[in-house]
Length: 276
Image (cartoon, one colour):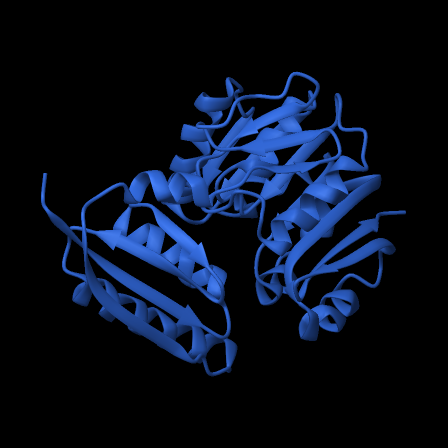
């Protein structure tokens, strides 16, 4: 075993969740979340990782038209018990009937257990946008309903719905996200009914098919997609990944629907609509 490993502390004042996802994609290793940032621990050269994150940040700034203040700190640490320290830093999430936890925590018999290892996934439920979706889904009766999860990430919402005995369709444009969802399906002993890499082009003939459509992605993408077309009459559309300052744009796009609920968690807005 190598006596030392490289540590890269990354801090950002905006779009931190996108940078976390990119770090997981680049390194395929565990990251530890800290206040306003995260830590990458690796035996690889962190200079290459830093350069990729800088280039990715420039792309986000160009697309979103906003500047991002990005800070790095590089250190070399002794290779001792950092994995155990990481395990202790990750806490389970309990809400309503759901108990979401990594593999190193035991199930709770009275809860619907969802196993997600943050080191291997895009979302473990703690992010404000994901937690908002969990709260909205907890309020719905999902058994025997048809659910579409657009931008499935780690698969947490798809697995949640499947454990509630729904028919679940999942997609993501990122192949790593699809692989992550498939891996987490196995951990949770469930099978998503249909899963694919891509967006809505695979289900054009399924307009008006789903009882619930949930999409936890960026506001600009939500606005660009005709998500409401795939919701049944009387069905529910749940949207998240929306920064507070973009809420009005999303509300305007889906003004043909009836707003059921809205919640803001750590500047991230989750909205639920009913299709009349």
